Image 1 (cartoon, rainbow, N blue to C red):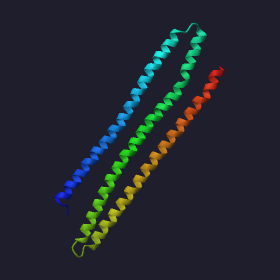
Image 2: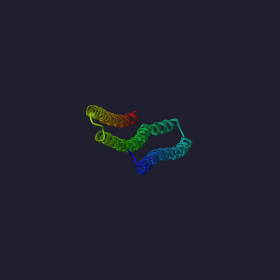
Image 3: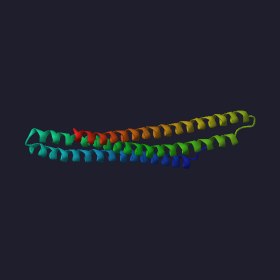
Length: 183
């Protein structure tokens, strides 16, 4: 069946894939951390500006005008932040999915080769059993491919829905601006 050299190569490949998977996951976490740090830095700067602006207020009308101007960009900022997080998560998930798909395809190929090897070396009179095993393997392969396609479609629909919601929120925020200014 498998020689020691083949087993060693297989283990080496699996270890490399595991480290590659970990590196991609860490890369995604690193991007999220950078985003959060940038958000904290921006929030701190804006808090200082807001505090200075509040300290400079001289009458109630100026206070209410300042308050209204501070609320306008909040929705846009929240939408942009959510979009960045979604981009990082979707991108990292896609890269991890490619690694897993590659490993599964390689494992499937090896298993198919093993079944073919067993079929070639099967004793006489076992053709029906070998044919049944091959048929079962093909059924499992077809089911696996269907599940992969369905998972990709679900991810695409979820991303499309998120993009639609983000666009609607951004549109609502922009539409609310003139209404606030008019009030």
